[in-house]
Length: 457
Image (cartoon, rainbow, N blue to C red):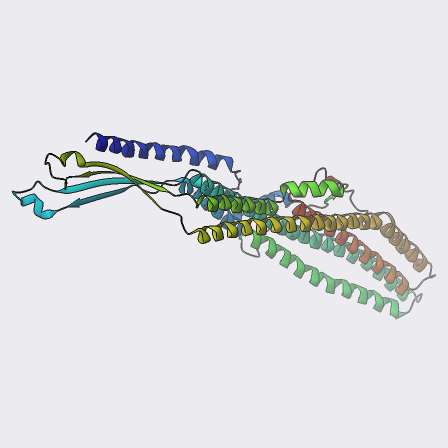
């Protein structure tokens, strides 16, 4: 009976301690995983834009992330993966067995015979820790996937916002250009009524105004599409009201050096971090595969009353023992280790390939941003001032009958196109900055300075 009591104390007392250890380890590991803050969906109600004077890009991005179902899906996948750690390090459930001989309970020749057994399986030292490291690393990989999805949604939202900004600025230019062309048309009519020009000038003016009206229809369609795209990202009805965009954007500042951007990308790209975590998953699996060469122990305690209380048998009722698997199939175990090694090599190669791709993406995105900055500067310092001066000279010459209305209309049309291209280049520059932020994995350092308002004509 002394051995039975000892085994029972070990089995009964160790189980609660093991459960307490699991509860202590699991929350600690969960606290090590970074958290992702999200805006509650209730805060993103449609009434959010009520009374807003203009639509701002950063709050819009946060709102889109908070309401995006794909972001919520990967977040829940990460939360689910984070719950695997306490499962991976836990012991198997203890086992209890009871056996009896029913006929012995009513026999006058023997005592009632029964057997009670409790057992607990203990894996070889290090196996549970390896499973825990694999589960923890997989959760970190899921966290990287979640952050990468947030970056994708943020980029899509910024692109939609810049489309919305661009079409509004183009509509403003159309309104301004319509007013200027009507002034030209009134001048042409007055000159025609005074027999200073032919009817062709009046017809040409009407044609230019009709073309402006055609383009107005196109831009209104583009505005409806831009509104629908933003509302779709916010899970709203496509034609819901949106505040107007700001009148001007901030001009991005100087782009950091390529070496610095590559360093930042290597440190904060979430998809690269996810691959690094998956390398650690396979390394933990390799450790676990090497541990399979060692047996697991199933310790049990038993009380067996089938040993009848005769002089030589009564002390045999209390028993303790151990069951162990015998890992003798070396070929199977070696294949498991080789497979795990190849998995590690696969993940390491994927990590190196992704790192090389990121370096290329950073360089390409940086070159596009630099090109965009130079284009915006060229429009602002050379093309637009020259085109505006050309219109002024053409109008003076037309007023004194030294030029045709066709020449004046061509100069104005060229000025209109250049102003539209200037706004297009500005929006493209911000799109390229959004792409650079995406490939770097986050905001760029010191990237904003105020863009002067373009000269209005």
